[in-house]
Every structure is written in C-alpha cells, then in structure tokens.
Image (tube, rainbow, N blue to C red; front, side):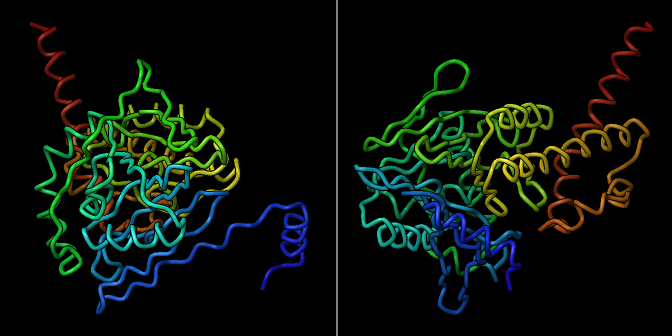
Length: 337
C-alpha cells in the first residue's frame, strides 16, 4: 500500500498533466515456451524501455539481462540494441511494432557486447548503426560471443548467428554529434572505458538518455574490455550533462535528476574502490586468490550478480594492476644501472 504522501504526490502530478511511469516489473519468462515475456514501459511521449532482468546470464531469465529502447519517430521506430539471441530480437520486433504501430526505421547499437546485437537477425532489413570502433569489435569477437552464449543460454540461442551492424555512426572530433530520424533528434556522445567505444544516445524531446554499459545500477559492472581510468573520466563527463532520465543497460531505470546522478555515482564508487584496492594489493604483492578472499564493501556485495561478476572483475582487471607494479619496478631497476 502506498503512503498518504505518495498518493498525494501522484494525484498532484496527474492533476498537472504529468503521467507517472508504471513501476518496473521483471519480465515473466516462460522457459518451456521460450517466451521472454517482454514488456514495453513508457518513459515519455514516444519513448519506451523494454527491461531485462537485473541479474547474470541464465537459462531461467532467458539470458535477457539488458534494457532495450524503442523511440517513435515520423519515419518509424528507432530500436536501441536488439538483445541476446535471434529469438530475443524477433520477440522485440513484434513488441515494438505492436507498441508503436510503426515499422522499424533504424537500429542503434551502443557497444560491442553480445546482448547489444545478437538479436540482429530479426532486423536484417533495417539499417543497423554503430560506431566504427564498435563495428570492428563485433567483427573481431562475434564468433566467440556466439559460442559462449550457446553454452550459457542453451535453447534460447537456437538459430542465432551474428549479424553485424552495417552502417557507421561517425562523430566529429570530440565524439559528440547528432542523429535525426523522422524529425526526431538525438544527441550522440561517444565515450569510453566500459569498452573502447561507449555510445550514449539522448532523445532531445524527452531528455531520456540511453547510456549503455557506462552505468550499472544495483549491479556489479561487467569488465572484459574495461579501462578503469578512462571509464571514471567518462562518468565525470556523463554526470556533467545533468541527465533527467537515465536508462542503463543493466539495472533499474533512474527517473529524475537526483536518481540519474545517483545511478552514475554508484558505478563511480565501485570503480574507485576497485582502483584503490587493486592498486594497494598489487603493490603488496598479493596474488589473485588473496584478492578474492579480501573483504568487499557491503554495498557492492548486495548488488545483482556479485557472486559471479566480481570473480570476473578480479580476473579481468587485477592482472592490469600487477603489470603496472611490475613495470614500475623494472623502470626503477633500469634507473639504478
């Protein structure tokens, strides 16, 4: 039951003509029928999010752990990322066409990770856009992604074959530009750190920002391509934008400037802790097993996918810090000769 204050706030907003977005619900996955249970939740006029589970890949959730976007324009719908499998893409397209009543005009991919593009077979007749760096990364790694997800996701992956983006998003020097589709304009900002090309798409009309893997909300970040220092710099730039509604690829949508800022701050706190701790432990000569046994702040332990993802964080990132310590030692040794 809502509190009286919440009820009054809702009434005031509705009286002022502002509809409250519906509360997020986890997709009702039907494993036996291979039904993802996708739902489109309106965030603003002509903008919807299709939410995945805030979790790690599993057969139980259909390996659907990504938030996808639908944006209506006069030319048709812009789809932001296409999901984890051929089937995911097909069900997304059906939902998109039913929700907007439009054809699909464009697909925009925000980075190279598999849940961003392995649904592309359902959009083979549609221009599929990504930055040149992301397109190169997908070409390099798509086969390995397919193999890994077939092992993780089983029957959900039936018939899935990687179909790459087929058109470049080329941005001016500074990594900031614009895209207009059917009279609707989007700001595009290319950042980095989570991957070598992290695209942010902001719908100018509504202020809804799809920030990809730069922000993880109440979930441990994935780090196979991470560069922590660059990622932290990108989060500073993202925070400076003063976003009103933030859609992370993983975790709950953050509605309102304060919540958007806190979503960014969560990822920053985690990365700063990683940077401080891994630097100190590498300087002390700890091995990876000692790192895995070290205490982790309770905030992070409560986040989704901690038990699996943090182990991967250590495997991906700790060797980088060990190599930095080794490089400094070698440099000092050369200086003494």
